[in-house]
Image 1 (tube, one colour):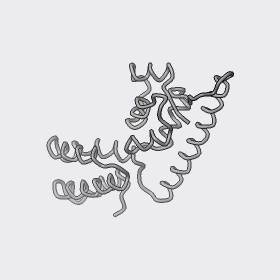
Image 2 (image 1 turned 135 degrees about the vertical axis):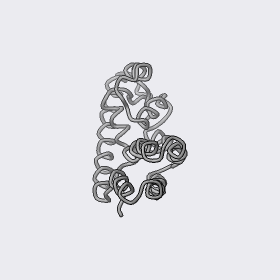
Image 3 (image 1 turned 60 degrees about the vertical axis):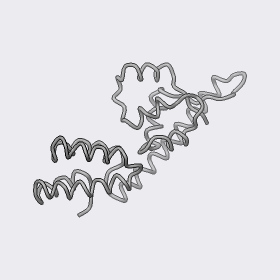
Image 4 (image 1 turned 120 degrees about the vertical axis):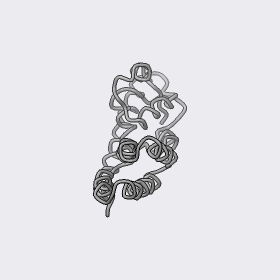
Length: 172
């Protein structure tokens, strides 16, 4: 199933009124009617089925394809089916992360970026921001987070490192 931006999606790109997560926004930009949900997920590092479900549920993207006569009804049904599929996947992902403990990729990404400059200052924080951007999945991002905790311990001591570890959902 291929996805393209709706008129609301085009408006969101111009106005940025909904405050979409970085991953959802990138998926919205890339939704051009030539890519499937799986392709969009593969193209945007850290994206999840929840991002795609958010875009579908908000009416920012819709399913497209050669539906023929009566195509709008079939396109609407395909969009509803896709929303259900990606909502189910998002719920399964959330349950898996709850079982594993820790933050999801978007949560860890946002938390790391917020803490980097706050805890280490502009220059060291910028270095970690670059590492965060290079991380291509949750495992690599967690490794960056572990190194970040070590740097915070060196710069500010054990109590600050413990606070950062808890904020990032890392085990001791």
